[in-house]
Image (cartoon, rainbow, N blue to C red; front, side, top):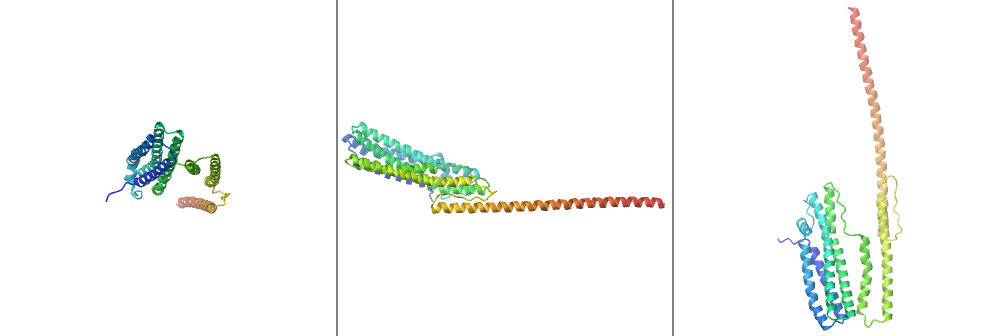
Length: 333
């Protein structure tokens, strides 16, 4: 049976999504752009050729890189449970590096395609409006392509990273902190989605008069404000959870309190509070057991000292009796 490389599960969907983003930008330019004949011919034939070359480079770079070889060797559908500690660590590092490379290559290849097509169209006689349409459409496709590659790759390796950490824990070792990005940075991607959605509308609307432009700018500003409010709200909840976990103290009862009104956050807070109470109870029981053990040890030591002292006195008394017996015997003789 032919073994399909695990990295293809990441690469092929990313490439498929990239083709979809390219087709979207390609159609948007043909619909909204007013290209000159030479620029149009260049765009119709040069764009597919450029995407083919860059896609092939992206595919080969991701599939035959050092990290891909390590992953395909140690992973089938799941992580090989017979791996040693160092092999598991190496695989985890390879997974993180591979996700980073997929995002990096997707962004770099998409940016090169946008630059190639935009400047090619500009050099072949199109006006500045058509150039801006091509550039904006390409950046829209690039944003969606790079965002998907980052999020999707981390989603695929999620279970593998968790399994690797569990295997290391069973082998008596804690996995090193391997991270690729933060939730904070991902929220910034969410902010940009309304912007690019409005940009698509802006490109397609013809003619573009002042009222439409003002309406679009107001809508975009409103979307960004709402996005920022949502981000601040969610990030503040996560920050409170992180702060509580760092200050958790078993010497006293800790109650997790947060201003969130979301059911999931409230339930998580209640579970944290129950966990803290349980840890506190276990600490109290441990301290009580330790105190009782110390008392028993003290009693045993006291009993031991009394017993030893008794035995020493008995031995001393026996020696005196023997001495007296010897003296008595000598007098008798």
